[in-house]
Image (spheres, rainbow, N blue to C red):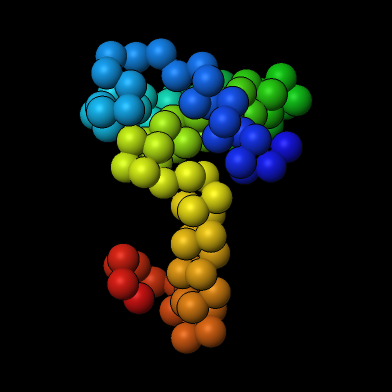
Length: 109
């Protein structure tokens, strides 16, 4: 599946208040889903000593899919496609690598 195909699919199943004019809803959803991943990882350490079993991997994969869905919707609300987002991120990371600034912190390294 391409980013374009995924974006089209996501757009076809987006149901929330004022779709296309509501960046708040998918932004809050994105944060919530990222939190669910963090909770699952936390419990891997709490309950299983950091050992990741296949069942937990699948649970995390499902949550990552939800994160991807929300990324696509937040992007769409601002007029971006998943491909736009991935391309810009790639350019940013390549620039950081070329300048030797992949490590560290800050948005504009």
